[in-house]
Length: 119
Image 1 (cartoon, one colour):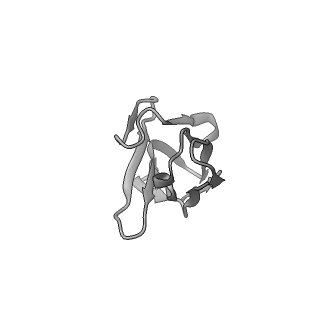
Image 2 (cartoon, helix red, strand yellow; image 1 turned 60 degrees about the vertical axis):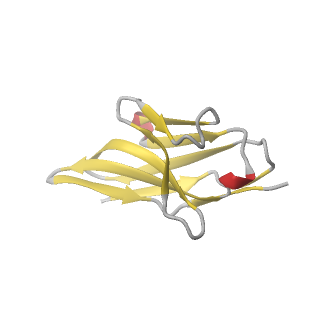
Image 3 (cartoon, helix red, strand yellow; image 1 turned 120 degrees about the horizontal axis):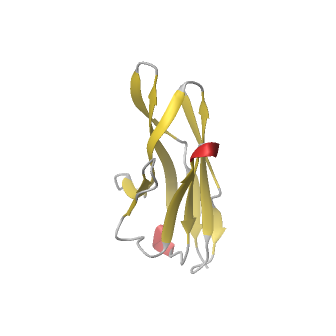
């Protein structure tokens, strides 16, 4: 019922910045909490940051002070401003959203967007 599409990934130099976007589309839904995750080869998918409907945020220790998560409820879009990027930030980033609909609630995942930090 809900589709998530990430965008904004790419190649940047260490210390550079990227802004990821996640747009939700569908009908008859209401987004609750949202989050960004990432998954490196050989590792489990890990939480990067979350944002509640009211705008409350949480961050993984590895990105605190560098990344900023936000959302625009009117546009059903979530963002991740990534600053001071490091090579170890290189991986695929996934958008996640928990949403309610007419008969309950569910969770949606995007396909992911590649972020590569290299000189």
